[in-house]
Image 1: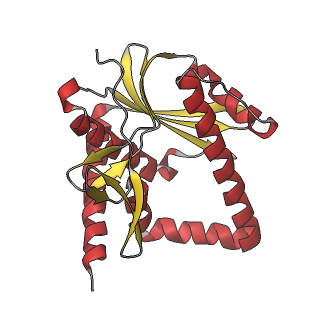
Image 2 (image 1 turned 90 degrees about the horizontal axis):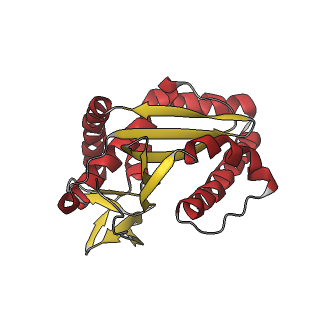
Length: 223
């Protein structure tokens, strides 16, 4: 079993009016940037319909509130996994309690929010690589106001598949073998939604991410 892994950092830089990450002398787009830029038209239209339904101002407020909660919760989860002081504000209490049964299953922490990158041309920041129930999980923590349907989470699955491939490449000398992916969606008033992703599914998602990455590069190179 692999134990604690070295943690790498990436520096945010701007090149040709684009935000990239620099690591070991090369610049890469982030996984989430690739996925956002190549989001299928159907998904874009669904998001636009939601904005129209709730109103632009309300949509911005909902998105801003969710983003703030997610960022602050990530910080506290990272502190918990690193055995540091955890400070949960009142508005995060429900989300934190939602994830507690998941965090309680962590037996060993290998990496928390370190940069991983891939020769295909991207960088990512997995939330955690941890051992749970004897298996190495690559975890992605999310927050949501209400439960989500699996069919809404396609980009989340592609995201962790890309992270897995990058982590395997970066930590090849350590013999890293990610055995499962885990997307844990914290909810304010109920237990977290858990979506475990098997290796065969992650392989399929990786191939889909490669296609999205190719499309991203094609768009980037257009005059």
